[in-house]
Length: 244
Ligand SMILES: Cc1cc2nc3c(=O)[nH]c(=O)nc-3n(C[C@H](O)[C@H](O)[C@H](O)COP(=O)(O)OP(=O)(O)OC[C@H]3O[C@@H](n4cnc5c(N)ncnc54)[C@H](O)[C@@H]3O)c2cc1C
Image (cartoon, rainbow, N blue to C red):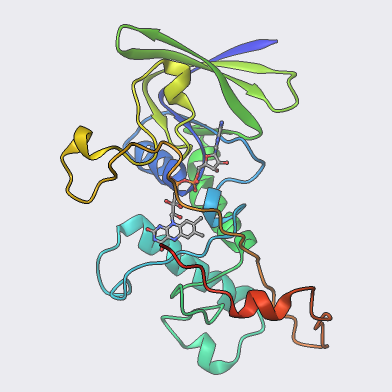
């Protein structure tokens, strides 16, 4: 079964970038379709459990209005729904996870709730349509332009042909690039290609950021939930990669 959907902006990938692009387009009066491969929007902030890590002046400047709103809403969510003490309740810069890597470390499920709330006024007026569990399988091009993207439900049952004036690839992995037959480069380019003095002698397309395993940690006030030390705990606790 294939259904055709038409919007002003089609966004493939519902991570933080895709979601904020959808919000901005909807606020500007456009109709938007966002497709997301998983069943959670938010990408690295939610399903990948990466805390937002910003510069040290983030609370005073260097932040878009919508990202400021997101951060405020996260803090507000904790203040309304968690058993916080007076000090935390009155802290305008509350860091729920008290982390040093992020000034607003929080649980993935809270980020999801806040993002869904921010989209709600537009989702409920059909300005934004979010298609979860869908990934692009085909891209139709005309010259150098994308004419349509066909996405398929991950159960393989339903397809949507998406037409629009603008197509945004917000997948972080550039899923549309090969589908659209666009030219692209991945990894590290050779010095001869860019003239960058610090570039590698030879190009290495697989030279990319290494994988980090992230775990969401929850605070439960009562009880001791410490597990026995896993195998090689002491080794990994002390291990520092050489980064050479
Ligand atoms: C451990 C770690 C630490 C980091 N630290 C920093 C840092 O300190 N500073 C910094 O600036 N950046 C950092 N980053 C990078 C930063 O987190 C990312 O660049 C940013 O989150 C990317 O956001 P995004 O919305 O573009 O993509 P993502 O959040 O990755 O969203 C992409 C979305 O597209 C979806 N998707 C993927 N494939 C498909 C498909 N085929 N069809 C449909 N949807 C698809 C995904 O499910 C996801 O929801 C870090 C990343 C990691 C992993």
